[in-house]
Length: 284
Image 1 (tube, one colour):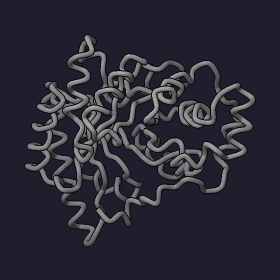
Image 2: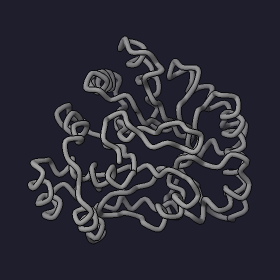
Image 3: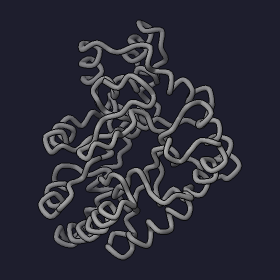
Image 4: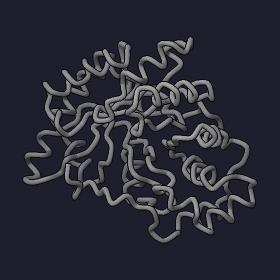
């Protein structure tokens, strides 16, 4: 069970993946990014999820450089975009990210999407080349953990068959309205820690009467209940918010836990809040 903001799940190599990470994909304006990231650090966030396509690594690097807290206290994750799925392009992308983050290493590096379009042998080969770069970066100490994002079991199988270092993390859209039990169970059997993005189901779950009723029992907000649904199942999650009040509330979820019946009730909700971004059909 994850019961502290900085507690985490141990990855295969012993690295701890924090239970709560601050999502940054919406931070594209320099002034807004500086305000939100500075406030998030002051509130207690130490794990931040970014990506090459977000174009905000420099904002995050600046916020950390000026906060007065050592780099080692932070867990920085970035993801390689589909346009850089090759060995050489990945190496160059990571060099750029390190410069922008103002750091000599990343805590976690992920392949953002499997990009499973067209001939299976082609996209599997591109992912394999990207993964070889990840393995070399990991073995050189440039990244401390490597993994994937939005990879379903049929994307993972060919990657696992070629890998000399298996993925340690898989970020998936997981929330009470879209639990993806099959993918979660597959990853657990393979020793891959699943991390949830989109825990609020695009906001649609926040008004769900079942979620609200359970929140009332615990004197909690619906958002806090949805985060706890992840944490109480050992699934680290990445909530995000534009509003300072909300992301402080999102961090304050360690005063209660859900019981097994509440977890089961939430897990059996009808599909709600699915983003529509299925890894086999996304257009990028």
